[in-house]
Image 1: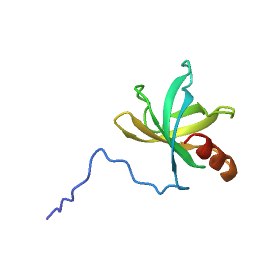
Image 2 (image 1 turned 90 degrees about the vertical axis):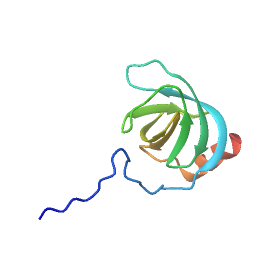
Image 3 (image 1 turned 180 degrees about the horizontal axis):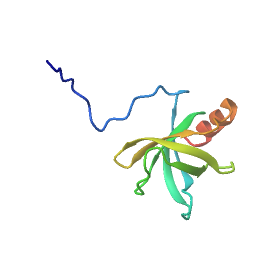
Image 4 (image 1 turned 30 degrees about the horizontal axis):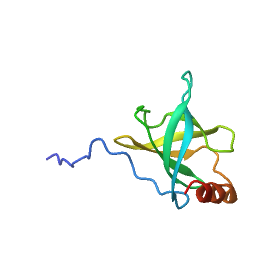
Length: 107
């Protein structure tokens, strides 16, 4: 006799965050390959990633570039989506002191 197990469709595997995120309020420049950059709103930031809000719909797993205030564009990967909220992970994490500086300045 065959047994069936339920499979949850549409949910991405949950991954633990690499660093605690701090609430921020600021703008960043967002760009995908082949597209012009535009502004997005930042709401959380850590040394390993950030949460942004945009009406553009990036795909989960997409590599993007984000320009944070005072820094050169940083490569990140879109990891989560919830409506217009997108959780992104930096390909190369920020130094903790750089992340702390941004968290303080973007409050």
